[in-house]
Length: 372
Image 1 (cartoon, rainbow, N blue to C red):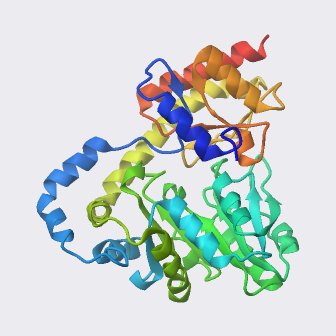
Image 2 (cartoon, rainbow, N blue to C red):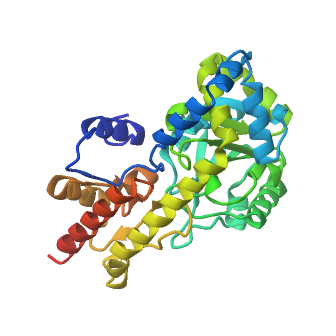
């Protein structure tokens, strides 16, 4: 697997190469930018509490953190497995549910590591199309793909890369459609962007779901490595041995700091929603005229911090991404990493002033390129 077709390897290499490059316009990240000042403030204010929290045994996840997550998302502590980030949660959920020869249905466009893990597990992959402009999930189309060997369906909410939102009613319809075809099939719902909407996890809507999430995308706290899997206790008990084999246990220091964050989570969420709202206005201001002129297509989502547009004249948006980076120092994610080579993904969770400059540079570059 080469760097050219592996998203995480591509992103990490570019992230290292562009570190501290203030002359570049970075629109690749799907995170809200890190709240380091806020984190430092809460660490100092709660130093005594941090010391106390570090005295807990965390062999199966910090009990205080698990209780805070349980209260936040309407589940029981026994229905939570703490993981080292959401990628780890996704990996554990898939390898614990899938055996060689199983059928796994994955949405497309899709976050690449999800279907890569399923493929490495020896599954036969089927694809469920989520089509623009709304990227809905059609329960009938999904049900038609389910067979007697289908062990897992893999979805995201908010959808990565489009930012589309699935509500409670839609989640219930999806679960019913799958159950009618195969009662044993589980649905993995990656919810790493879900806190942009005031929803409960999919696993509280229907027990067919396994929900994963973290403090990364919405809160900008990837380096706390605070992820989780939410599901019924039987499922959590089934997944837990896989976590022990791959990770042993989590960091008591990071889990203690994550507990402090959860106690203040409303302040972090308020910050993130404000950043996304401010940047969305700048995105509409810069890209709106291009959409009206037909130079760009793709609705700007009302939620989240990612956008998945198509630029006129480019069937292969990888060529556009290369041109943007080499000629204009504007960096976006080529859609080939998500299964739609004609589009690009733009993140709008960055520091507002930097994002304003970067999205203006992108818009100017697109106008110049497409007018030639």
